[in-house]
Length: 505
Image (cartoon, rainbow, N blue to C red; front, side, top):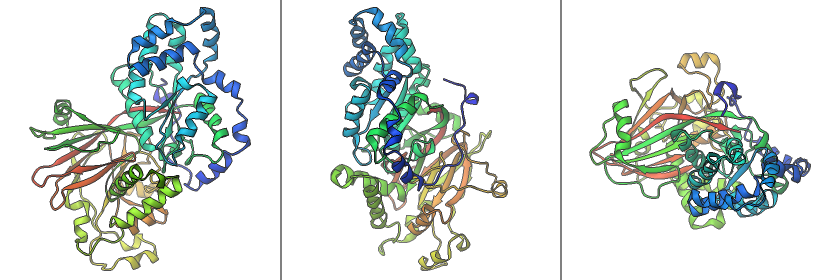
């Protein structure tokens, strides 16, 4: 893996969300046809014995099975010829449930273009299985003197066909290679199948699945083999609960033993309850708490219960909009006090700045200045003297959020200096924290008529939550939501620290 200073830096700005429409049109026709199928196979397809060995090891969940399958190959001279053919081998993970559910058709197309053994359906094979057994098989063969397997392992790249949550899941599993000192870690590219696709947008992979996708798939694979790499910060979120457990865990979050969190608690001065339940996860784009996570939670449940409704990004966004209205983000029910919806009632926010070891509490904003709203937005506030509380708190690593929107915005140098901020990058070791208030405020932010409420930039973050009149909160991490149980008398802690950097095509 290249050193950080030798790799191109991820851009601090990104094109407008409107560009994704042009990208979809541009992908039709001649652009995909420029890639010759035979040349593409020469670039990305592994030798037959190697890909069969990897597939056997993953299927059996045993490296030895893959090594045995490799030993059954035919003439040794054939291997040497194919070593030159494997210029940049590519493995593809497909999530058939993402976005418009193009996964099954895409999987068939990938089988035609490369090989069945190099395409893995995430409903059948977990990324961790490929990392543990598929890469493990290549490493065992390399230890036995197989130069072809060693070359494949060093040059391997990964493509993920899915949404932000799927990409985060795969990247989170790949970070285990750093921990286990099994480098190099394969760079990762994206075929955008999700609804928002903010990770794909941020690194030039497009904001939506192309209309002419059959020809565009060749371009994606060719780009995966030839694109330069850049760095992306990864962030570990640790959830520490005094009691109980999280039901319906998202892929990105895993339960862990309290002892695994003890060292982190000691370093950061956090008290770990005696009967704590602990969870860990890694995110790359954002983590949010509040109404936006509640809407995402409702959408995910509807998609699972009635998959025929989620037929594509447009339909998905309409469902999101509907949930935003029904969940009270726009109009709080008359039976509930608006103040109860504000995160300020259940949450305390602490941050660490760069090169600081002490936690600093940040006051949650409670009122939006009317001057920051467009004139026509002021009609929605029934009582101007009533404070409008932050109802969604977002921790952002990338420039894009919510299908290519830029809520942090392009801030002017004098504003950055006044607030003590620096220009945001995806590899600067900092997270941006902003707030969204009622649904009208969020709508104007998403329409890029106004900016979100800037709260802080931080190198580490801690949320301390107590239920009060709530018994739960909603949290999401890279588009994967969950329902977080809360207690009235004891605090639930979510702590975020930099985990490392990943390579992205």
